[in-house]
Length: 231
Image 1 (cartoon, helix red, strand yellow):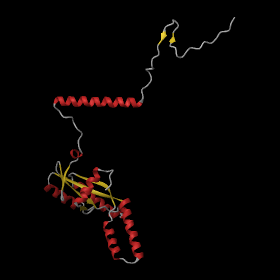
Image 2 (cartoon, rainbow, N blue to C red):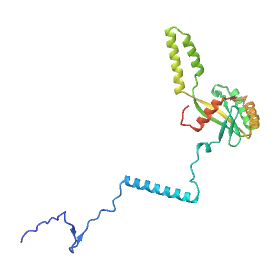
Image 3 (cartoon, rainbow, N blue to C red):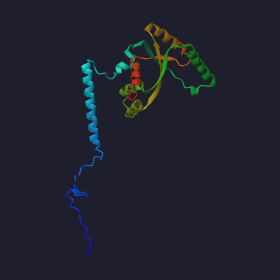
Image 4 (cartoon, one colour):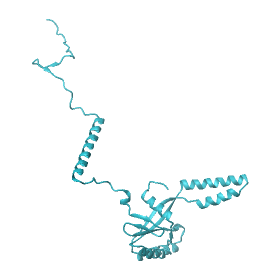
């Protein structure tokens, strides 16, 4: 009896089943497509849907709805020296002069809080208090030392002045002050003047209000609506 021999199949020939029929090889359809191919197909589908939507709107004689712009969302219309014109009414901004309550004794602290509570009970109209971080302003100090620099002739004195100017520039670049502001609202300018007078009189004994320049108000509105941006 002869031993059995292992017969190797030819890889180039098509597979045959037990009945002698030839089996054709097909690509594996269960294999997942490439991610880049899926992304291109998705973008292509989105472009097709967008074109069909625009075509349908054009046939109906309607314009596609666009996203609202910033000017359409913000309530501010125009900035004046004495007031800020809104889409509905007017407003003005005052700076609140803060006090170090940790340095006050109990009697002064209670007097301060009672005056503050009295104002909140008496003034029932619309207002808002806003807290913002502003860069340190050393313009007055720098102007003083720049004037001294022009007058100085001693090298040691000039070196000291340069050091002071460098410190002020560093403070303006790295240091921020927390400032408090009060927004007062009204329906028209005449009513706004009355409310501003009431607020200034009511806050005089606790945290007095200080008028602001037009430039300062513009900076406040800019920081309020662009909180990730520096001045």
